Length: 180
Image 1 (cartoon, rainbow, N blue to C red):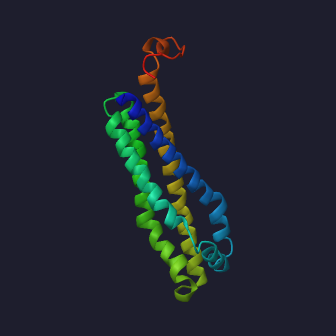
Image 2: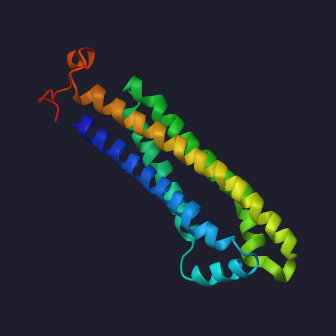
């Protein structure tokens, strides 16, 4: 029963991780090109568009959910040796992504979207937007790496607990029947 529950927590963490990855890719390819294409007008238009909800209202709770589900999956799967470090390093990637956001992007968000042209020159806003996008590239990389690590951890957990050892050795996969 614990194996099935642990499998569920590992699967839920993988799902949250993929939601986070898909969301950051949507920001990267759909939202940010529109926000940063014609500064300062595009920043103002972006703020009008995001009057009800923005990445800031979405990503912190989803990032926290990823860390929490990851910690739970790690605690429950820790005894499964081939899995533990894949999950651990996946969590570390998301923590690194969150720390990068807090340290480098939140201050730039304030400059771009709160202070704007009332406080800063257009040239300074363009430079800040460029810095924001460079840091965002690192966030995307951390998220991709974390998602790959978690996927490998999920596959390893599945193989270790639900596929017979003999089948894996012989490269023939079949259900063991007694663990599902």
